Length: 267
Image (cartoon, rainbow, N blue to C red; front, side, top):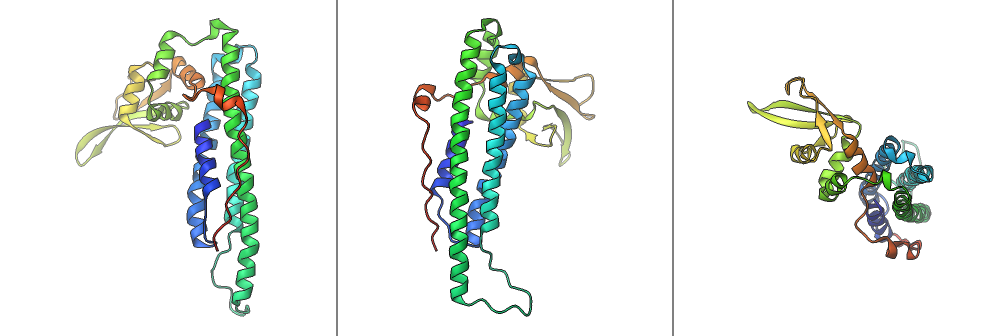
């Protein structure tokens, strides 16, 4: 997740826009991405809390840090929502209001740009904290597990975690709360589909890969036409909780990245 936060931070740092419709179209996707990251952080917190990692000495600090990541990523969304709120819109006033001349419009936009840039700067700071927190969390969990070898993931879990593609890992995260495997009819043909508990559609190829690795299972006591309940196995929860970013932590932890300067919006 650190790489995801860092990528969003780069997008926010480099953004340039014209106040009004252009700003809304550029900020909107960033806000939606921030909300996705908050949801992903919450899923990982739940996975950690449900795993056997909680019996490892030091795990409470990791859970609290993961919770702080949920909070900080929520602030990212709030800061971007403030940018949307501060954006000067060009709709027509109610009848009877005096027409806005060019000087008043320019002054309104200048005030809005100041507010928007301030909130964008706060967004970059929170994303900085999120990315750094992810690195600290990964290193801390590694150290915790190193002192409690009986809680290290099995060779099977390590192999399964390493074998997952980003899409399969996202599918596993989506299915943590459960899901359904069912048969639907498309143009008269039976198609097997997978849906997570929250309604998220999961690729059938990703599901089959997870099932083959023993990370999820379906209740085959019911038919596909009724829908088979999908649950995440203990191994699946451990893989979700313990999988690490591929980037080396040494470089990332050498120094916390500084807050970037947000570019001024184009008028």
